[in-house]
Image 1: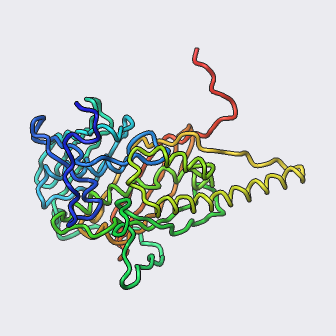
Image 2: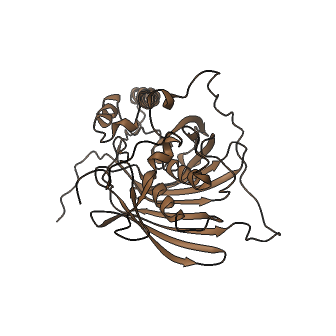
Image 3: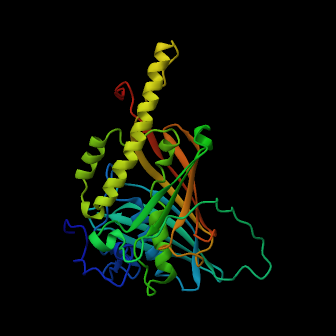
Length: 365
């Protein structure tokens, strides 16, 4: 296989589709098998990450599986494992296995491979619409009282229309219970895909777009509830940005926002250091300095509750919390509501979260 980001030459971007639809577009690889697909366009390598953005593998695996399922079936659960770091300079082949086709439920597994080795695997379950009967047990977590971000004024254009940029946008929506222990804190953000998802893409495109966005800011919640920034300085972030393999996926707005948020985190860190100095003056023990050394996702699960009740190109609220961290790992829970307050998904993710150590690691004997 040739060393290139895609197996086939990418076609021109389709202006009738939202950016996320173009990013997640798949191409069938008929010569390999009827249920084998590949990424049509190069995939994003985030700053500081070991490989491609995990949301791409999640969303494209879902999109591949959706192509093998009748339109009246919707995904209700997806359980994923990240096995190896994906290389954004090598094509990915998505192999779909039709495990089971029942009257009410359908099961698929998808393996994403590079150079013949699986880098990602997922099992998905689909449920036929309205198969639960007329009598139902129903309840759902209520959406917190929040104010949606303001829309651009008349005559203004959203950023992606002017200068390109990432396929989705997000904004902070606050930290809840900031003064409580880490396991009781919650972080909130608004998110939506840029542009308008096409009618041709249908609800499948909205599901794939949602899956793509669920991996954003996810495992990082573990360090955030401990007030530990992912990058310890603007120079470190800029260095990571310069190392991007596909820098066109980040525009000036994305970089400026990342720097602004980092600056806010640095201000809080400076305040903590001053408090540490005060502790030393008053003979109190200083707070231990902590810095993230490694952060990698291990698994990712999505439970889709209302697959037809939202648009991924409209603002959604996501709330994340970390009930546990230890043994070099951390667990994060995420709830996502549509703008009208419908709970549309619940997600979990566990990952490796290791701090930089004061002493070098001992040699293995």
